[in-house]
Structure formats: C-alpha cells, structure tokens
Image 1 (cartoon, rainbow over the protein chains, first blue to last red):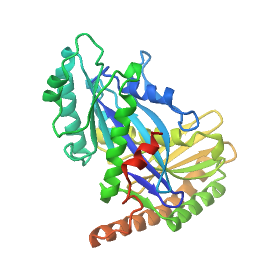
Image 2: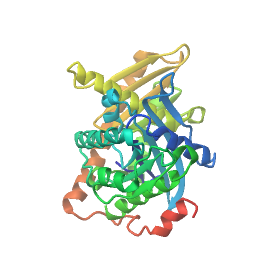
Image 3: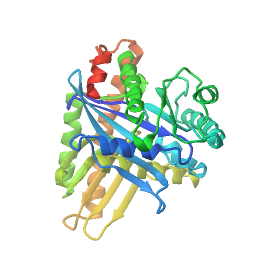
Amino acid sequence: MTFINYASREINCKIVYYGPGLCGKTTNIQWIYEQANPDKRGKLVSLATETDRTLFFDFLPLDMGTVKGFKVRFHLYTVPGQVFYDASRKLILRGCDGLIFVADSQKARMEANIESIANLATNLKENGFDIRSIPYVLQLNKRDMPSAATVAEMERLLRFRGEPMIEAVANKGTGVIETLKASARQILMELQRA
Amino acid sequence: MAKLDLMLFEEEYKLLQEIIGRLEKDASAKVVFLVDKNGQQIAAAGDVKSIDATSLASLTAGNVAATDGLAKLIGEKEFSLLFHEGEKDNLHISIVGKRGILVVIFDQNSSLALVRLRVKKASKELQEIFDQVEQRAQKESDAGSRFESPFSEITDEDIDRLFGD
C-alpha cells in the first residue's frame, strides 16, 4: 500500500525481499546499505538471532530523490527465510507494494526455491494480493557457486509470469542494484496506471 | 492497488497534526507519533529529533503485527493497547481504527493513567479523520474518476534519475 502524503509531498513504497533460508535476502539489503550515500539511507534495523539468522525482519529506509516534485522513499524489508517462521513472514507482507524473490542458484536448493514461491503465493493471498499481478522481480542469486543450476533451468522452474529476471552475486554486489531498480520501475509504473 | 493506497491531503494532514500536537501537551508526553499499520510514519509531535522516527515506525508496526498474531492465536480479535515500561521512559502504543497506530513516549512528568485518558479522546478524533480519508477514497473509486495523479506521466528517465543514471 503506497502512502502518498500530499502535505509533505512524499511517497513511501514498501518492497519485500522473499526467498528460502540463506538465499541472500539480508545480503542484498546489506550491500545496498553499504553502497548508499549516508545522507540518503536510514538505519539498517536487523531483528536477528545470535547466529545472524533473520528472526523477524531487516529494515532499511532509502531516500531515492524526487519524481514529479515528490520525495520518493523506499522501505526495504526482508522476511525470515526459515520454514518455521511462516507466521512472521505473513505479517511482513502486509501492505507491500512490490516483491523481490531471491532464488538460491545452487541445484540442491531448487526445491526450497519452488516451495518458497508457493508459500509466497499463499501468504500474499491471505494478505489480499495476487502473486500474478503484484509488482514482482525474480533474482537468481549466488550465480558464482560451482553447483549453480543453469539460468535456463532456473527460468523453467521458477519464472511464471514473464517477470524481470536478474542474475546476481549479492555478496559481491553483482545484480543487487539492478534488482532494486527493476522493482522500483514496476512500482512507479503501477502508480502511473493507478 | 490504487484502492488500497493511503492518500493524505494538506487539510487532513493538518488536522491529524493538530490532534497529536494537542495530545502531546495534554498528556505531558515527550513525543507522540502517528504511524500506519504498515510501518510508515504519518505525523509526529514533540521532541521528534531525539528519536530515529523511521525505525520507530517500522518496529512499532512489526510489534503491533506480532501482537495481533498472538491475539488471534488465543482467539482474541486484537490487543488494542501495548505498554512498555522502562527505567526512565515508557512507551504507550494503541490502535486507532483499522489502519493507525498511536505511539506516546512519556517519562515521570506524566503517568499511565493520564496518558490513557488523553489517548482515548485523541483516538476518537483521529478515527473521524481516518474515516473521512477513507470515505473520500471510496467516493473517488466509486466514481471511477480520481483526481489527476501527479504520477500519470512518470517516464523511464525519471526512474533512471532516481538511481543516478
């Protein structure tokens, strides 16, 4: 749910990074945090366990500049990927404007990717969204892993609506900004249609 | 998506701001925030600069969402009030209508009883404004013709510029 404040001329959009455990959701927003101009970024809030696994969510507010005289601010969230945190995942999807699905390219994680997309569809539905129409970007992360599946294979298994598909190595920053940009483009274009 | 968007215009924003400004004084609070349930800050009053408002809004919404989940688990509709007591400062969180969260931060200069009393009155007033906002949005959506959106002419170049390309 985009929040448009005509009084302060601000527009806030919520983008959620979704995907199976250890696929690199937090790594994506950590990279963005490290690269962003300190004046443009807020604090990176991480609600994580002692072993740095996301417990509830990570949160990063980003000031993007202005469009048509409105300050554009993105609120980036990640969900906890581990299967048993499903109740928390559902809560974080509330009011989201766009989804980025971070898929783990390792062959052994392909089932986990598929399950996570199915779980996303269910949780979106419970929040009143449709996975086939909400702004959605697919990121193929960990492309540098020796056990990575081919892009064609991943596309066949995971891409289902012609969504933008971006190859990434999040811990090196490859594809991270491109992914965010693809999501931003979809969300702002959606506003245009609204 | 458009139907769900929250749009605040100058006059509504001023009214909301006025109410929470009054609440901050009447409750002898340090800071008062009005946040939406998705974690966006709507308005604030008091010593706002002393706090990271964006993180506060997001964490409050997360807290309320988690408590909401707990309520449903035990068969309650919601817990409409959360109170966190600290050594110096206390946090009073309450739900306003369907989409608002009111956060009051106060110290020994006030009391829980006073805050509760003032919050009750302010919540009612805030609720009326939220209802107006919703009715307006509904009317526009029913009429099928919304006012001219400033975003109707966003171009690819506008988006590239946001990313410094």
